[in-house]
Image (cartoon, one colour):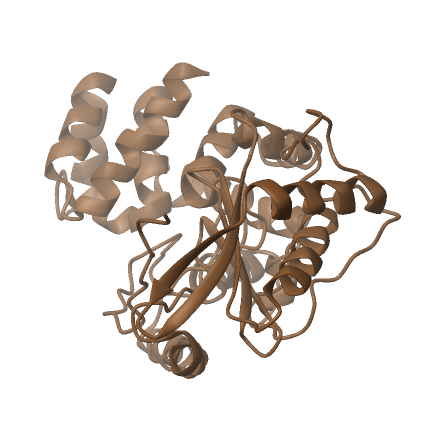
Length: 355
C-alpha cells in the first residue's frame, strides 16, 4: 500500500532574495513579483484541474527534485522522485493495464523530461539514449535502451508488481519502479562534460558546481521551483539570469526554454558563481572562506552574506579576512538571517567534504 502522497502547497510567500538572488532596482523587483505571480497563477489553475479529477489530497506538481507528468486528460501520471529514487506510475483509468503499460514504456524510453505542464504523451526519440538509461534495470538486471526490453519489463511489472489504493471515492491502480542505488551519480555522469566546460570557462571548481547541482535539483534537468527557478542549477530568469545577460551586454533576461537546456543552465549558474567570486564578494582573501561565502550567496544573495558580519561592506570583508575559514563557516551556518541559506551551506559543504 502506498503510504504517503506528497501534497504541494501552491500559495506561498515569494521572497526577493531566494535562489541565485542579487540586488535589483525597484522596477526590476516589481517586474519579478508580477512575473512570478503570473507563473503561480498558471500553476494554481493547473493544480485546480488536477484536484477536480484526483481530489484535494492528491494534487501533485513537479518541483526541483520531482518530475511529474500527466497524461490521458490528467487521469494517468508519472512521478519520479529524484531523491528517494522511486518512480510511481498510477492511473484512475477504467482500463488501467493498458494505460499503465503505455506510461511505463514511454517513461523508460523518454529522451529527456518534458516541461512542467503538458497533457499529451511523453515524447520518445529512439535515436537518443533514454534519460533513465542505467538508472533503471529490468527483471534481468539489464539497462533499458530499446522498446522491446521496455515492453517486456512493463509486462513483468504489470504481472508481478501492480497495486491498488483508494483515495476518497477513487480507485487508483499503480506500479512503483526503483532506480538503481547510485542513481544520483548516474545522472551526474550525463552532465560531466558541460560541467568541465563551464569550470574551465569561469575558473570555478568542478566539485563546487556538481555539489550545487546535487542540492538544487538532484541532477533533474527540468527542475522547476515554486519561485520559477529553473533547471539543474535552479537559475532564476529575473535575478541571476538578468545579471549575467547584463554582464554580457544583453538586455532583458533568458527565456524559460533557454534555461531548461542543461548546457545553458550550467553555463549561466557557473557564470553567476564567477560573478559572486569576482564582483559581489571580491576582497575575501582566503579561498575556503570565499567558497563558503559563495555557496551561501548562491542561495540567499551576497548582500545577506556580508550583512551577517557587518552592514558596511568594506568592514564585512575585513572581518571575514580576520577570521579563519572554520570561523567564517560557523558564523554563516549559525547567524545568517535565512534558515534555508544556513542549511544550504551545510548541505553543499557536506557533499564537497565527501568528494
